[in-house]
Length: 103
Image (cartoon, rainbow, N blue to C red; front, side):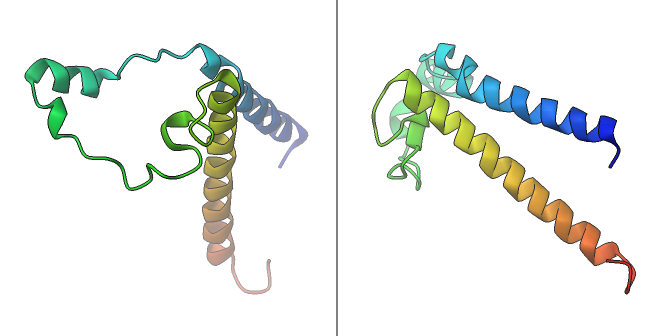
């Protein structure tokens, strides 16, 4: 990877972490479009809890605490997990496609 490409990746990761960690503080607490439409159509009461409702970052809350730090931390963890998974898959695919002896 060239120096320019590496710089672009670093800037992209920093921007993603900043958006997830800081801009998420100002996200709306209102229901999303799907929840709003379900309320308007009258079937919101049929919603079931998520299988991950008991996880540490459920509903972008850190252990159920509703504050800016928990929303930011949830966003940052989400970005890092996504980058880790995408990077791992990319590494596996590139490694699998490399001819023998050229690792």
